[in-house]
Image (tube, rainbow, N blue to C red; front, side):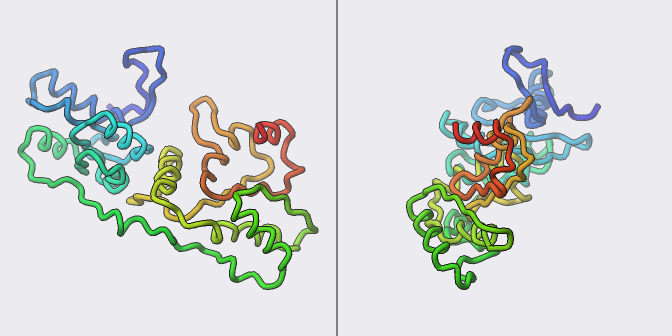
Length: 263
């Protein structure tokens, strides 16, 4: 039977639950309950991961947020898919074991595996001055506009740019992130949590090191901009946290979307 993507039969029933991250703990719990394995310290570990039919572990979204929350609850260790190891280790708390299969997870729980905890050099991963694809220094002319952007960036102000098509509004807006203050580690972690939950981290990426720039289309819905939906997920406002949200062609956005943004 294929691994389910949503589990609706877990108590308490009134709390909505979804996600394949439950696959690994359900599999291990079943093996323990049926006395197929003995795990004396099961309560010390958090288990997260999606299982394939072959028993291989697949990565899941939102690992960093879960790792931080579980560390705050005092858990000894976490067992996560191999591709999520770097991200989980950014929580800098519980011991992280990154495994590739159900068998490896069981060996760690039983104490028979020699796999060491995931080691992560925070200084190497966190680069406050990450590489941007563009640079504010490339702009020639536009002295008044550049001065306005510098003031807005220095004071974290909103800015309304008005001008005819082709005057450079979008070009300037895309470069605002490059003159914002360097990311602090706490800011980088906050941004990474949001992007992780949204499934926007690339494979093996541990941290978002550059300030985000988001430019949603003017046809976007209020849920797409603010967040929410039947299965709530971050909107563009959240994805631009600690970065820049650029609303191009602002008058073209629907009124209720603009009102939701202001509120």
